Image (cartoon, rainbow, N blue to C red):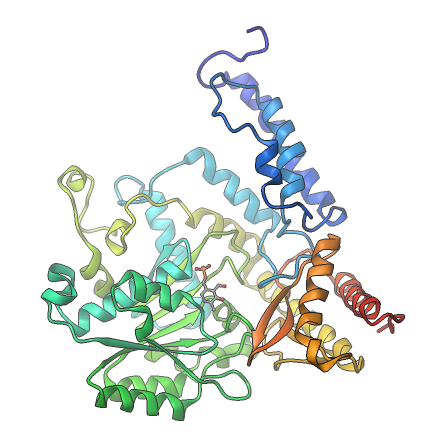
Length: 486
Ligand code: PLP
């Protein structure tokens, strides 16, 4: 009984002490992150086995809990903020971003209506507009912050569905006598398109995957053929999802041509710029935003590219009222807290309770400024180019896709031709199991390739060089011969 803290919340003097301790813990983690294993090599279930299965009956001290974080949780983490974490798109932990998250925690507000959170609401409007300006989007576009792009596309397609079959919101698809809709996305587009179709009752199979050309960009002739075919079969083409920065290779679909087809067939144009969109901030990448003015909706994920910690995704809609019309619904108990003249972000989606996500974006974007973000993005592009050059100098490897943004897909092509896919998977698995770096594998045209993404502010040329050596050494060990240095 003696060791137990008193029931209830922590006295303020004690809390202050804990916070100081935690500040050191966070700074120590950030300072030493480059020296620890990137990923654990645990067997599934090992962490759960070390944790008590019974829920706690008695309160415990913060010291005990933090000690268990160090002992049980940290060793079981993949450290996405590690400079050698090069999986997916790299990652967006930064010191100012962490501070923004920390400030958000004690406020713990619900940004559902203006009245329940005036500053959270208005700051959200402000950061959405900052991003709009950085992206060069005209001001008919306004947006809403969601957790993820997957949630964003579902809302965008809900608006497309309502406009193509009015009163679906009220009566449902059958009641509204909706046709069978078709949505088109390239064979490289993200699986969130199907997820949205599942959630909206459009049907997973009605997402039609359009083939891509040699650079993994949507093939326009194929799109036209598929739309004509579907019209003959009495389907109703609803929307095209154009991707700016696809998940595997970061390829960019030809948005202006897609926009033209959407106009001809009165289809919704959704741009998935979840990853690539943020790079439109760079003058040399303004071309990424070509055709965006013609879109109905656009997704940008600043938690992938623009240094905001997970999660923070913005859906822009041309004339945001279209989105509000589909989702506004004010129950009586919220009516008193609903000021019509102001934005109530609960009206723009299915979520009622909403985190104050805008604060961390505001903190990091002010701390870096446009200039700072552009400098980091340029550096990541430079590092991707260096890595690609190193790959090109080793005849055992080849680039598997053009390098457009800081994502490099490459393939080990040496050895037994029948085992090349397995070798590529094995290199990735060996490296990840070593704890020295983390990369991912994907399939392109049915072939397994390795893939790195650069986006972490801690990753430097030295890390990329180390990774290159590690890949070459691992490949060399598998071939049973010494590696060649870059
Ligand atoms: N779109 C693209 C191009 C992606 O690469 C991803 C995820 O990697 C998504 C959408 C889904 O993003 P989220 O995790 O925010 O739902």
